Every structure is written in structure tokens, then in C-alpha cells.
Image 1 (spheres, rainbow over the protein chains, first blue to last red):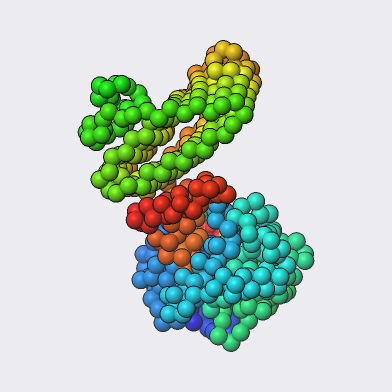
Image 2 (cartoon, each protein chain N blue to C red):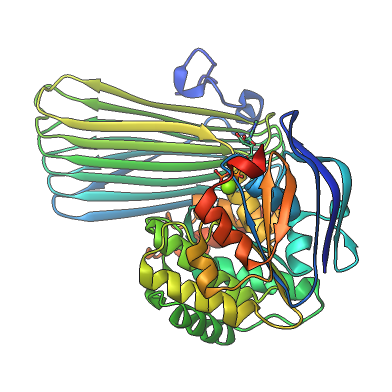
Length: 247
Length: 244
Ligand SMILES: Nc1ncnc2c1ncn2[C@@H]1O[C@H](COP(=O)(O)OP(=O)(O)OP(=O)(O)O)[C@@H](O)[C@H]1O
Ligand SMILES: [Mg+2]
């Protein structure tokens, strides 16, 4: 589904990703761990097409699309979803307005008819309820005044509404309380654990992986994948840290 | 008031005097709001591209009376609204303004507000969106007379530039001769938030729609819940759409 080869990327002329390769097949969940500043969020931004993140070498294939040729909104319409490490606040734009416009823009891109207000509202309410987010919060401006944990829950509500094929979830577990962690874990499984879906889970801790069991765990250090393994690798990292790996 | 204004006059400094000459002289509309009453004055300038429209108003607001002025300037080569206000004791003045300018439009809101007596309040809010080579100005002066204790006057002006070639002039000014007053004024000029644009794009919203969403959030809502909402918002939306 996603095939990254020898990816080199830089920000403001500074090389961050230095020959990263990774393949994710449909039906798989991959966890990416690694030290602070290793380039994990950068990988998410490069995949989503954030302006300023320049790919200088390598290939990025997603469902037989060459992502390098696609604008960010077209990548989203193709089924790519980035759950932000730091969700952005947008004063004056309500969650409902934002998500309805987003969903209908994606549907239009795929040649599907737009959803009516009522149809959309039904989906939005159901997803909010599934993730334990007060549906009233959907009327508020996007992420404005949301607590850290509420922002992360809201990201997952967005994912549920948009229903993507591939999700990159950047530290979706950070800032969540114990119940929220369980709800978000269950949400990820419900929405994304399907034969035609895949997830790249960026995390620092084992605790989310207790709920969302990865098929593969990778260590990203200094801009490359330096080690890959099964779920047991996360446990090993939790015990021993990165010192032997990153060196 | 029949001689053509010059740029030496600070209320005309950023205007398009060639366009002004086409309609000069301009009549002044005088309003007197009797004690305890309310004047609602909606001014929508949305005439065709080449239009030159200058609205000149003088409002005397009586004791405990109020004047609510709504202004939207959304098209025309020159759109100018000048409002001169005098507030008596306990009076209230409110000006809410939106400017959307593209091409080489010049759109300006100029106010001269005098708090002549105690306990009066005034609130001015102006939002400006500019593209192309447009010029948008808010020149607002609030004067508080020596006797006008307990005055509460606010001015908030914000402009959003969609192109580096557009110009915003925001001049909220205060002239205070009383000592017990509350006056706040702020002015900011900015561009669309790149982080927000990327967030919207990452959820599938194309660039033009993302910009429109952010701009509507910026100028929209100004007239929410007022009788002018539908008419004003339609003109603002049309102007934004034309610009993106
Ligand atoms: N605009 C920029 N200019 C220069 N360097 C930058 C810029 N933005 C990010 N970086 C650097 O890129 C590197 C990778 O950052 P990134 O956010 O991808 O790390 P990360 O692996 O997600 O870390 P964390 O675990 O702390 O979230 C960091 O060293 C960071 O300082
Ligand atoms: Mg990060």
C-alpha cells in the first residue's frame, strides 16, 4: 500500500531524512519509535505533503500514486490521513463546518455525491460518541480551547468521519488519560484494522501498543530506519532505551 | 467643504483623489438621535467595479441613546465611509465594519468619535481582507473631552493581506483629556495562517476553499444575529470568491 524507498528530505536546507525505506502492506499496522528529533514527525509531514518539506531523493508510492506529484489535499482524497502530533487551532471555523467541507471535498475528488447536512451530522455524532467526545464539542471552533487529550480524541473523531485507507498517527497517545487511551486504542482498531487499511503508528511508549497491537515495530534514528522487528522490539526498547541501537 | 480634499488632510492621506474628483462635492447626512432612542445605520457599498461611492455621516447621539453603524465595503474602485460622532452622557456608539478589496480598489472607513460627556461607550471593530494592489484603511480617532469621565472606548482593527502588493493602513488613535477612562485599541496586519492552511489541506480541502474558509472566519460573524447579516454576508462572500 505504501512503499518508501531511500527517502531523503530536508527542511530549510537541513537534511532530516537520510535514506529512509519502509513498506507497509494493506491490513498491517506498523509502529515507529525513536529518539526525539529523529525525524518521525518529519516523515508524517513529508507523506502528507507539508509545504517546506522538500524531498531531495527517493520514491514515495501510495496505492500506485507517486505522492511527490500530488498536492496535500489530493493525497488526503486518495485516502491518506495524518493525525497531528500538535493539532492546529482554527478560530472561527467549527468542527462540523470543517469536517463536512473536508469530507465533501474528498468525495468530490473521488466522483461521489456530497453528503447532506443531516447525513453528515449523523456520521459525525456517531463517531464522536464512539470515541467518547461530547458531540456538543463538534460545534466549537476546531481545536480552540480543547485540552491536549481532547485534541487527540478529536483527531480520531476526524479519522472516523473521513474513513481513510491509510493513517499516520503521530503520537496520538500523548496527553491521553487512561480511559481516553483505551477509547482511542479501540477507535483505531475499529476504524483502521481491516484488510484494506493500514496504519503507521508513531509512538514513544508501549502502552498504546497494548491496545493496538502492531505487526511490525521500527526504530527511526537520525533519519533512517535502523532496526525492524515484531511487537517484542517495542518491549525491548522500553526496557533498554535507544542507546545501543542509535549508536 | 467644496474644495477637493488633498493628501495633507490625514483623513484623506490614503485615498484615491482622482476617483474622489469624479463625485466631489459630497453631501453630508446629518443624524440626530434623541435621548434614549436607537439609530441603526447599515451602509453596504457593493456597487460595480468602477464605482466611486463616498458616504459622509454626522451623528449626534443624545443622552442614553445609541447609534449602531454597520459598514461593508466589498467592491468599487473607491468606497469610503466617513462617520463623525458626538456622544452625550451615557450614550453608546457601535461601528462594525468589513472591507474586502481586490484589484486596485481603495476602500476606507474613517471615524471621528468625540466622547463629549461622561459615561458614554463606543466600540469599533473593523476587519479588512485585501488582495491584488488594493488599499484598505481604517482611520479612527476617538477624542475624550475633559468632562467625559468613565468613558469606555474600544477600537479593534485587523487586516489580512493575501498579496504582498496590497496595503493596509490601520490607525486607531486616541486623544484623551479626561483621567478616569477606559480606552483600548489594537491593530494587527497579518497573512493567512500557513499551519491552518496545511491542516485543512491534510483533511482534503483544496487551497481556494481552505482560504475561503479561513477568510470567512476572519470577516464572517461580524454581523451575525443582526438584521444585516444575510445581505452583508452575501456581498462579502461574493467579494471573497472573486478574489480567490
Ligand atoms: N524548520 C526547521 N528547520 C530546521 N530544522 C527543523 C525544522 N523543523 C524541524 N527541524 C528539526 O528536524 C528534526 C526532526 O524533527 P521531528 O519533529 O521530525 O522529530 P521527531 O522524531 O518527531 O521528534 P519527537 O519525538 O520529539 O516528536 C529535529 O532535529 C528538528 O529540530
Ligand atoms: Mg514528533
